[in-house]
Image (cartoon, rainbow, N blue to C red; front, side):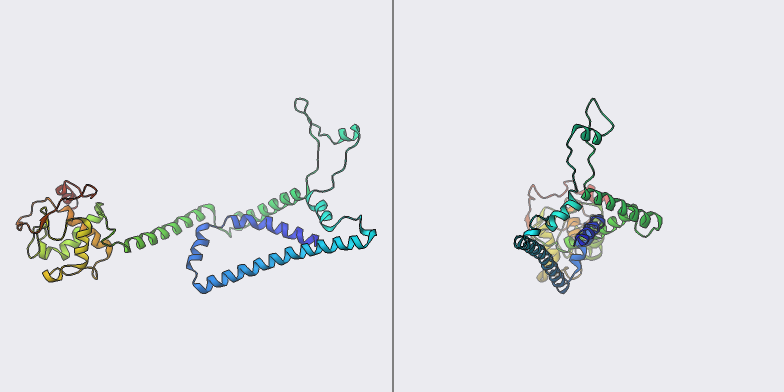
Length: 307
């Protein structure tokens, strides 16, 4: 039993640093990738391991109880130390010799002194000796494996792998965020890339009815202050998405992604205030944007910057 405990302690000391190096993102990603069956199996394994630990604790308790009972029944062994006391003395605290006379104490004093202060040269406790031996053994194995044999990844390779994993996770989060854009949460995207993409989409799909410069034709003028269905980014996105079938405006939700509809809606709002070649007469009602709507006041410069 004593050898078993010491072996478990050494294994724990040598394997704990390895577990400490495991990337949190790796196990979290693996956990997310598991299906319901794998998660169920993982939970069952956890329960089984927990039961095993409880049984080991129960076995230790029963051994202590039986040892106490045997000591009471047998007066000869009553004064003998228990297995736990023996284990603690051998592997935890060690055997501390009592220092009696001043001469014995002087012999155990260290041979160095600082400002008249001396220290007692106590021995190293066994548990600390095992820790020291375990760290030395792990350092040797680690150095040989990573530096001599080159089996494991270097620090630079681990860093690059972390960057790759995080970049993939960022792309996944961005894709989920973009896919969730609708008329209730869409925002005006004034980035140059988004407006340039919106301009391309508009000229490809919308210019036939609204003119390339937004002056209108079959569709209404998009450069004035009047809007039939509202002039906010949410209103424009909603019309682009669902269309107005009775007036010939088709829904684009099946042909454009939510991100593309946001881009073209943002580009349409930048056309307000520009001067088209042949502007169509105003239609709808005058729209006054709320202060919180982040639409550039100088729309002409915004459109010119992406041309």
